Length: 554
Image 1: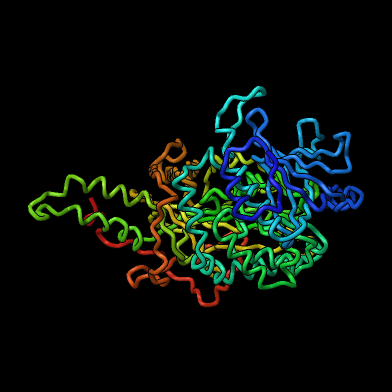
Image 2: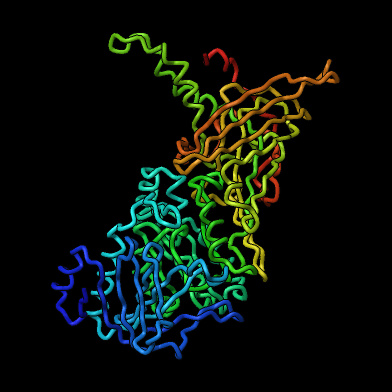
């Protein structure tokens, strides 16, 4: 059944609600987007521009869009579009780009994506076509798991397969709110470092195609445009994409080179390969929220072989710490369950479980680097080379030499990332003692501290296992080797382990940065690769453990 675009909008809307087998639209012109190999970009081919007809159909139960030029009578100019992967982007009131995947017969380069520019006769016809496109796309003619002659088609993306729908819904809701974007924008260490990394490396961005992965408010896309990017594709899956569109439209001198794409990087298609990927995929402990996986997927899908990633490398830094005040604070949370007459109820049977439960929460705060009892070590994640699957589980061996004699209460962690520009290499760090960021630092507190002497070896492991709530389960084990008489025989003197959920931290940022009066700082242990202004830090005595602490704990 043919539907003319000269019908009224109401008639067109009514017809699209019906289950049609075919629906046609006349177009002013259709122009191919063809690859220009020398610049890794796509340009419009004027030779292929001519009036055309667009046909939506459901042949053999498969929803499809077919473009046919009126000048092509032999059928050689027919362009078939798979609606399950196709995307429409408006370039203007009467001009739209349609991007879609290639066929199985295409080469690897062509299979990546194809595109056509559609010119409508007027704005009303453009609006009705977009309405029809969405209706046909949402019809769900092919349902998830339906059997087809050539196999099974699933409507789920890789993201949907590994992430709980409830977690994804909360995640995109959170980042779709301006107040949370403001919190990140007002982290001037974060935002300023990104700006400096881009502007100091204009040579990497000027005249290049950039993809902003998880664009949020679009601030990094605007930075890339300021640096002279030829075009920026800002991909954002949350409702923040609408705000980003508005912000970019409010900066027209830059916005004319930015296209906002609402969708997941695992699903959207782009008309060209990228020379630069830019993103802020870091969460608490670098890996929380599992956006690094999407960053790596975007690399594999969109980045040209010689392209750059900003950032390109991440490092998780770790060091044992001693903090009696924090340990007592966490342990004392369970004192509530020591009540034997809570409205006539004895709560003490749950005290042990509550005590252990509070130690399953990683502590997020900014702490004094003088609490570290050994030089830090680090684990490198190379975003340019690693596989997505490498992020499913991280197993990091630990080995330290204690600089002081004290009680070890757990492991302190932070991260940094490298912007490996051609002109300037710049690090963004979240280290203790450095300017504080909205990531702060993270500490895993042991319910059973270890006693160590200066020079004693501390070993163990930090294992991070990804789970479907977009976070990680942390498995930490620390051991202190035998010291003194009998040490030559080897063996382990003490071992302490804990299991924590990175998804459920204890946010302690409001606590005072200064240490309590009854806890004196020990000698500063320098953190690795971080320059700290320590003029105000004096070499003082070792930490003095709180007296009779054990008597206060179960």
